[in-house]
Each structure stands twice: as structure tokens, then as C-alpha cells.
Amino acid sequence: MTKVLIKGLGLIGSSLALAIKQAHPTITLIGCDIDAASLSYAQQQNIIDISTTDFSTAAPQADVIILASPVNIIIKDLQLLATLTLKPHVLITDVGSTKQTIVKAAKPLQQQGIAFIGGHPMAGSHKSGVTAGRIDLFENAFYFLVPQLTSPQIITQLQDLLSATHVKWLTVTPQQHDRIVGQLSHLPHIVAAALVNETQTTLQNSPLGLRLAAGGFKSLTRIASSDPTMWTTILLENEPLISAQLQDYMAALSQIQTDLKKLNKPAIEQFFTNAKITRDHLGPQQLGSLPNFFDLFLNIPDQVGAIADVTQLLAKGHINLVNIHILEVREDIDGVLQLTFDNAKNQQQAANLLRAANYQIIRRN
Image (cartoon, rainbow, N blue to C red):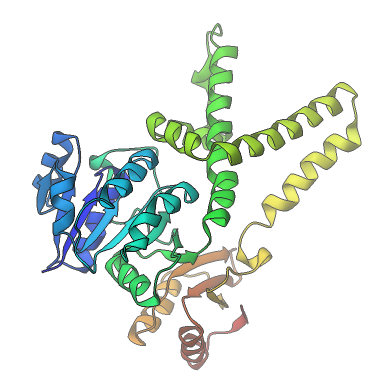
């Protein structure tokens, strides 16, 4: 029987465990964590089958090892694994949010012939811990893979193991990953936290203060509620890149401050115009689809059951749909439905089925 060891039963680790159990109920899931309460909860809730605090003893028994601790612990665990006698065909992966340092730490294992795939699901929550885990956490999220020196068969093995996550897989280099995630995730977390801290300081003597915070402020700063320990580790592991991105961001703030002092209306308006154009063009309908994903766009009536009819049609045709998105729905006219598939064959089969059912395909990417 296959044994999967998950080291770290926080939000990500417990959510992966739930997804693995759903798709592969016969797999034995071993949970490893330093927190006895987390292990007890996970076993009581049937998230795992076996609990342990002894990683060194559990790792040699495992067929798959998933490292779901903070990045600095993942690095130490990889170094430890390189000293242990593991199963010859063991697969090791991680979920850390920085990849260059982790991939470097995994090299001694790979030199021994051990399969390692760097991974990072771009999903999370302001909640943390094993009690926050849920099976739909990764639904339609991007899951980065860094499969250097790894065969396609091993990659397929990992994707099958995690099939119930229903993620969208993206293969990148460690450098690409850290640059993208630094700008789209790490920097925004710093900005959100800084805005909350600065607002608290500014309004601390106001009788109303943060009690008036709502709408845009809450939306903009939601991620400031994330785990402080985890984010401290993330920033320290990706310091050179994040420092450079912070410098660029501060330069942009400094420029708008200069324009304000000079009452430079055209420059200020252009500042907001550039941001609006970029923000309004987010999404595949403007920027185009990501590599390795295949889209169909079709008109769909704005009426109850319309989307269900499409998905049921695809399900009857045994066509795997990895994402669905409503691009535009207005009263009395058709909406635009974007369907995303993981290969061109499924895209073509879906197009044939939908046309046969009298759906109008607007375009395909």
C-alpha cells in the first residue's frame, strides 16, 4: 500500500491531505508535525491515518514525501533527507513559496537519484493551522511545478496524486517562480501590512479610527491577516529579490509624492490612468491564455441553468474542464463563458460537442 508522508499539517498540508484522501482512499497518509494538538485533531477528523513527530523514522517508510512546513524548515528537512536511507523510488516534493533556495537544497538528494519536484500552490487564506484546512482550497488555483532533472512520468505521478485539488499546473524555472511570486504575492503582503500599520498609527487618537474601515480598505488589506511567522520566513528566504522590488515600489511612491508637491496634474492623472488600463486588462480575455491551457469562449443565455447545461454536456462527453469563468453577464443579452482545458484534444472535443448542441463559439485560444 502506498504511504504518503506530509510534514507540516498547517493550512496547506492538511488541505493536500484531504484532497489525497478523496482521490486515493486506499493510500495511507502519515502526518508529521511538532504540534501534538495538530496531530491529534488531524487524526480525529480522519485527515490522516497515522501521526508522528519523528520525521527521521517516518521518512524511510514513505513512497511520497510532501514537505509543507515553512521554507526554512523545508530546507533543513531536505538536508536531513539526504542523510537517510529512503525508498529507492520515493518522490519528494514541497509547497514552499520560494524556489531557488529549496531547489538548491534538494540537489544532494537528486545526485543520489532521488526524485524531487519543487512545487507551490498559489492558494491560501488569512486563516492558518490544521483546523483551517479544506478540500476546495486549491480549486482552479495555479500550482507551480519546478521539475528540474525530473522525468515526465514522475511529474504525472505527482499530478495524479493531487488530482482532487483541481489545480491548473504551470511549469516554471526557480528564477521565474521567485520573480513572479515576489511581485504578485510577497510585495503585496508587505504593502498591505505597511498600510494597516501606518493607518493604525495615524488614526490611533481618532475616536472613530479603524472602526470606519470598510469596502476598499478591507479588500486591499485582507492579506495583512496572514500568519506573521510564515511571512517573516518567506521574506528572509527571498530577500535579495524582494528588496529590489521594494526599492522599485518606493521609487514609484516617491515619484507620485513629487508630482503632488509640484501640483503636476497631468502626471498624477497619467499615474492613475496607467494603473486603470493595466488593472482593467487583467484576465485571459485581454492578456491571452497562459501556456499549456486551451480556452473556448461561447455565448450563453443569461438564464437559470445555462451554465449547468454546458458543464453537464462536457461531463457526459468525459471531457475534463479545469476552469470556468463568466466574463460578462448583463440582463436581456447573452453572457460570455470562458472554458479552460488542459490540452488541445479536450478543447476540440468540447468545441464539437457545444456546436452540435447549438452553442456559438466566439473564439478559441
